[in-house]
Figure 1 (cartoon, rainbow, N blue to C red):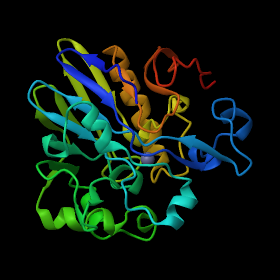
Figure 2: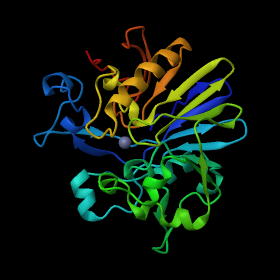
Figure 3: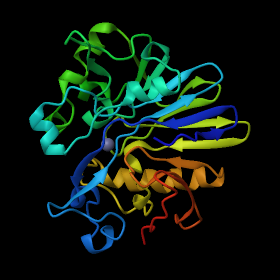
Figure 4: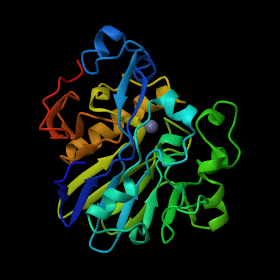
Length: 291
Ligand SMILES: [Zn+2]
């Protein structure tokens, strides 16, 4: 957990630990040859690379907003072994900031994959599944919802009913369409690309801007628009989204923030998409940029 928040005008952004895991490096970099991506992420003998699942906590003058929820505490021992998953420390990390799970006003879900929504429903002290953030509205794009409720053949692999059952019952879901202003400083925009209803989050305050592109830009090494993941459902859309949003937010001198990157929390991009500035994660790490 980076203790120093990223300040955007009147807002603070903290990264919380939602559980590390390892995924196949080849799948993370889709069409990119290993000779290139391994310069950024050195794989283990099983070809996996280390990744985090670290939700952003956005503290605005009026709200505590969580962007995605990490792996949660419902993984079976078999799933933990497959993903080499680490512990989900979200609530204890919130506590370090003096924030309880009852203080989260809004949970924005970029999309429905288990590594982003695993913490929406947790196993509580009595061993029962319950909504982790009982006071929070959970915001998701309307176009994402059909895959959540009734996932197709491919979505079934990563949209797990266990992550949504209690949430559906709770009535704490708000479906939005396209662009939606959440509060004066924060808005979401539908992107598609990674999944049908994937959305981005934009934070703007006092002339400063940050954008969170979710799984469209999973790590800083994906800064080349053509570096897409095998997990992307609509890779051509991902490429178009990256070109569009990189240009738009670069013009606004925005920080691009990451959920999966164990090396860099946020970066700024230059005119050719190259990384010109970075917000470090561990020990001011200096990392190679993707070519
Ligand atoms: Zn993901």
